Image (tube, rainbow, N blue to C red; front, top):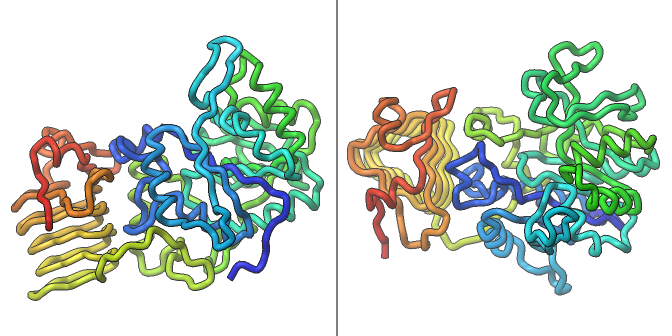
Length: 425
């Protein structure tokens, strides 16, 4: 399945963001470790794309709630037969800031890579990827584009509605894809000429010449006026200095098994929920059922899905192992592992691992978070007759989060606060 290995390329995956807009799902998880699609996490798609593209020895830059991601990676990615590893988890090494003195955390995306530059000294190019977006990408095409232009930096780019572009780095490019201007999170994003309503935005994926990256990160590290960020500081400086910076059109990168390129920023609860509803559709934009680029994850001994006695109606729903559904109606929903539902109605909802829904419950447009630190035998419990996503004022009084589009999020702390859990032995 993997017939190529990209030579002399180091890889860093940025996986240390706070994920504040995804709270409470990120209270006890790194943002890339938030579950996706039932059995996966967000970062699984990125890591498997790197693997199928022929890239190895990925440095995963972690910071907040790092254990959640490190544990998953250790379980999902055993060591190679030759004794090597597919990835390395890289916490902050420490940095002697000219103003603050010794700092034991990353000061920004650029500083995170700077702290680990010693690991790339023998490589020609350095690939930096966002670990908290959902996308499938054949990075070998990206690399070929970069090498063909002899670029100092190539940025993976996509078109985004202008009203959403304020969250990204926005570029101005020439017809040959040369980037002439770059502004991180502008208040008034510029539109693509001839494409009103769209801006050309960075996906947070960069491919640098190694020696260029080293020079700019070293200079930036001791600039007391810098925010040590690729989009705010490094890329604009390179453009101002006249270096060759190009934008790679993601629209030309269709991974095997996909009918079209797939990239989603799931940095908000609403976007995260919408990505799951797309999975439940009859013809989803993201194909997780392809044999060409199958996306693996943690292997466990969970038995398969079971539909119990009585009349159940299940449609447009994705379920993982060890789910038991009895006499219930489930529509447009995604279930993690070890979920037991009896005589209940669940619609347009996302249920995380290790949950029991007792009889008479109604969940509509709900995300149910469960503490990822639970032992395998523990189950969070939604008590008999509970209705969530039906009465807004009641849900707010329970401490639930309700988004602008009406998604209700049940935090894992609700179960602990009310002792709504059982141990299954």
